[in-house]
Image (cartoon, rainbow, N blue to C red; front, side, top):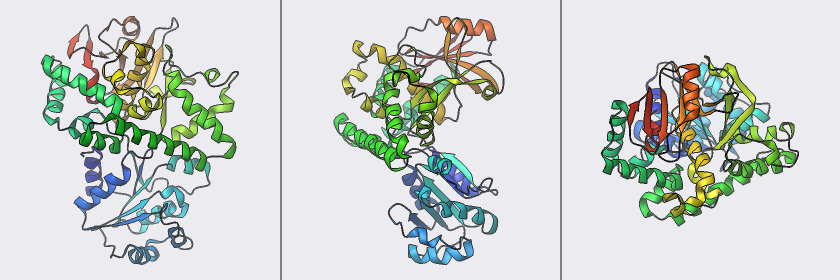
Length: 431
């Protein structure tokens, strides 16, 4: 299956300023597969080392972590010669060996001709909670997310449809209705399957939503296991409570996160470490309210007002135990959840494209779902789960802040009117 990360890895390999690369992201998003596939197609050989399946590897990094010392030993362990520029060295689950992470500094400084990529599912958690000697400035860092809507369609062989969507997005012209309807069907399938590579692969092979759900449940169980395995003892219960409550809060009309909905009398001081753990693990992301529409938006966000979205739509549906057909046909029983689910979907697509997302509220509670910086402009994005695109809040925002244009995401076809770019939900990946 095609992953967009491949083009980034190709540029990394060619770069004259290449440093050891840290590929981070939540568990099961395809880090190891992507690295090994890249190594197979772009190098003569791959020397792969997994610190989870081979704990004795830690001993190798116990005393001396200079490249001169390590390379002969690693070659022996791998059973193959590690050659500069021709071998890809891979350290997997590197969060389990602090010294291996620190060694990247010396590879960068003393042996830059060795190509190294390291991966870790809980790197953010490990570095934040332990006294790691992190190689600041000596590594490149890239985050891998689940597959986006474009990658999902490509996996299903819809290359021509993807090309059409991109063309109509750029030209602001409506798609032929048959293609628009087909893309909307694929969008709803994506909501159920999500972007976890194993789930997408299973779906392309079987089209069986029950098998996909079983895989999703397995991934959710591994997340819960990580919360116990890689967390402080007194934080485990709070972290699980926070994670379980996020999907509940997405069902509310106001999706702003409220501590009191987790526990009667719940406060930030009690749960902020748990939420930080979930964010650092890549399982969820926080979207803060922005108080002023000024650049840079990061300077004007309110740390006490935020929403939380999960990293994958399929896992969201699995966690809510939603039946596939209910989502595919958007039944009325889901009305309370549709808004939060679609917001979550859009946030995933924007995050994969590298946007830092915020939301906006006026004093009179007009709300814009997302505000981003795009091509040097601050752009508001209004999200609707259906084709009812009357947006009073967007009108208030545009009158107040006069953006270059606004984006409206809904089930409606492409178009541009009243300084608003209409984008169908399936094309959110184009933004």
